[in-house]
Image (cartoon, rainbow, N blue to C red; front, side):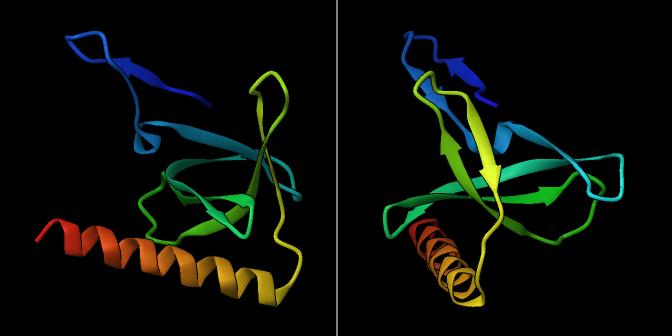
Length: 101
């Protein structure tokens, strides 16, 4: 899931929007998502993704990396956790929009 690019000066950068996530669906098959943002809430990393089918839906998952840096995701367990994650994501979007002005 890591997609790193090198700048001409050799400085390594990582842009989550250039990375994709493939998820196996409960009902069978797979879905591919573009990663919008990886962010932290209360010490837990989360990932915001959107489908690559043109939909504007945004989905949120817990994000983990093992000791070797291999990523994995998990479901958000409670409505309270989901609400807190979406509130932080909305604030991130507001801050980024303000920075672009």
